[in-house]
Amino acid sequence: METRDINDAISFSGEKMRKSPIFDSDKLFYDAYCLMPGQEQKVHTHDESDKIYYVLQGAPRFTIANEEQDLGPGTAVIARAGDPHGVRNDTDENAVLLVTMAPRPA
Amino acid sequence: METRDINDAISFSGEKMRKSPIFDSDKLFYDAYCLMPGQEQKVHTHDESDKIYYVLQGAPRFTIANEEQDLGPGTAVIARAGDPHGVRNDTDENAVLLVTMAPRPA
Figure 1 (tube, rainbow over the protein chains, first blue to last red):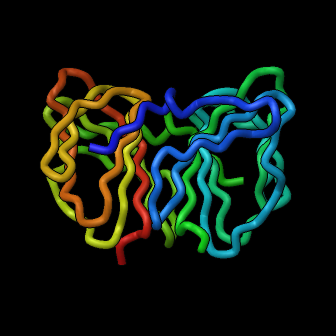
Figure 2 (spheres, rainbow over the protein chains, first blue to last red; figure 1 turned 60 degrees about the vertical axis):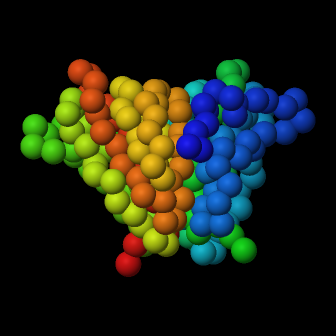
């Protein structure tokens, strides 16, 4: 059975946000995003794919379709295909997100 | 911004496992599955879609491709397209799963 303890996927890099693949599939991405204070994934857009973030740790600031909001553990947010989206950790604690995107971009 | 507190999606039914949609999309399902003791989703197969379960609460028993395993909070498991899969809560505590499936079946 293909199981993963999410804690094993959590690791941080001083250089930039670390994206750790949890499962590899041709249908979707399923990743942990690990952001130290000051790190971010810049705003970008996927024309064909929806992305859902679920906050596991921390309280990073999300930008989705020109709205900004800080979201904490237990909260999920969707960036639909075509919505510009990004996330920045402006806090002084680490942040961890469980991120699903489908379909997987070609 | 389309946010959801997962706790607001958690609710149980004495009749059967409750599936609470968190986000509705034509590309994927993103649901909370809430299982009281004794409840289950029977083994079934999606020929074209991958499903990923992430355990939020409890320790239900997963069946995937004829393997059985009890999984606890923080663990994710994938049932790939064509893999028979199901989940049963044989414990005496409630179980809650965050479930992603893509592509969304027609």
